[in-house]
Amino acid sequence: MKKLALWSRRAIAALLLLVLLWHLWLLGWVLWWKWVNPGLTSFMEIRLAELRVKDPKAQLRRQWQPYERISVHLKRAVVAAEDDSFVDHDGFDWDGIQKAIEKNQKKGKPVAGGSTISQQLAKNLFLSPTRSYVRKAEEAVITIMIEALWDKRRILEVYLNVVEWGNGIFGAEAAARRYYSIGASQLGPEQAAHLAVMLPNPRKFEKSYPARLSAHAARVQSRMPYSEVP
Image 1 (cartoon, rainbow, N blue to C red):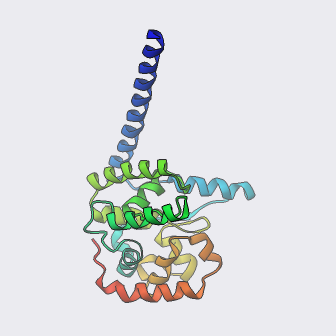
Image 2 (image 1 turned 90 degrees about the vertical axis):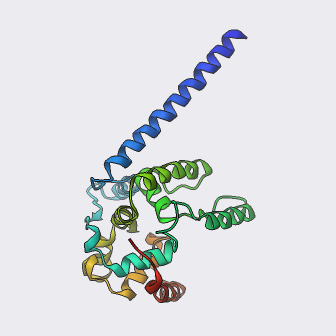
Image 3 (image 1 turned 90 degrees about the horizontal axis):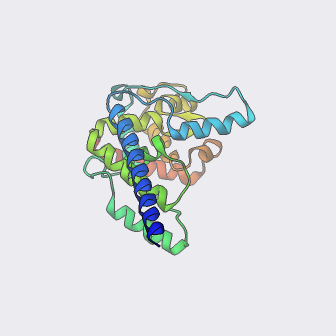
């Protein structure tokens, strides 16, 4: 029994050490990306692998644009559609999380996340699209790191450059060129609102843009003048 207890303690200690090392590795990347633009994110790697099952030569469409070269209309639209309190919160929208918990309990499974832009960025950079409470917990830890080390301008800049906007399409520049044949700096209010409301399910809405989405885009556009951005 003593040996079993000893080995159990060692196993727990080893597991805790691995968890600590894993989070230190994540922290190192978060710190590095404060100044250096990310290359392929976890989401990008997943999508690229999926594309290459059908076409081994497939490539992602993405092109980094600095914050000042992304239309302010798109910044306002994304904040209005995804995270109204972005500039004020600490990375978490507690009211949104409570509503998501209630919805998940009603459905009996995780179907909503109540995620802020910061949380979505954490997921895109390091995690996967799968829904689980373990992933949400990991997402929360990374969100705390990002909010502690980056300012809101950097968070929004990276988010707009790495978020998925269609099958193999990542970032504002690629999205603007795919849907409107213009650069991200040239997007107007209506175009920006339409792109913003695609974000919850971009690959689906790339194929079909239902009337209800257009109505949602109109509502987002009406709120954009009041959206505060860094």
